[in-house]
Every structure is written in structure tokens, then in C-alpha cells.
Image 1: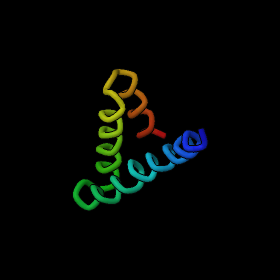
Image 2: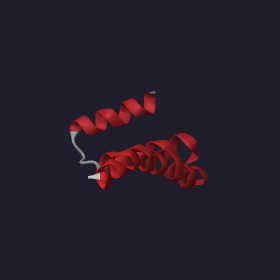
Image 3: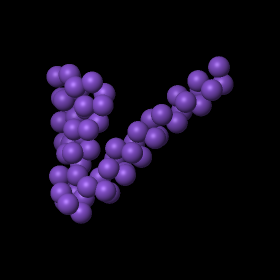
Image 4: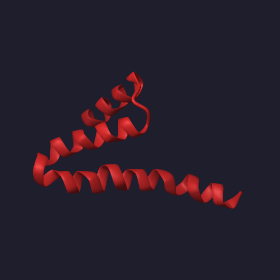
Length: 64
């Protein structure tokens, strides 16, 4: 059960690093910061099951 705790604690950090750090850094030279952030949110929504609720959450994360 210790492995479950380790995965639980690191999953959120890794997602934040990937979607809000790496993807924005990679796409920003081509799309600008806002375009890169929008694409990152879109990729996040697609990978987490594109439902209407996911798209609302993605839109809200762009606003805040």
C-alpha cells in the first residue's frame, strides 16, 4: 500500500509539471503564451475524457 501513497502524491505534481510547465514552454515559441496555454488545456481535457464538464473546467482554468 505504500506505493499507492507515493503514486497519489506524485501524480498531481507530474500533471502540473507536464501540462502547465512543459507543454506551455514547448508550444509558446510558435503560439505565444496564451495560445500555448489554450492548447495545453485542450490536450488536458482530451486526455481526461472529453466531456462537456471537462471542457468547462478547461475553460475555467484559462480564466483563472
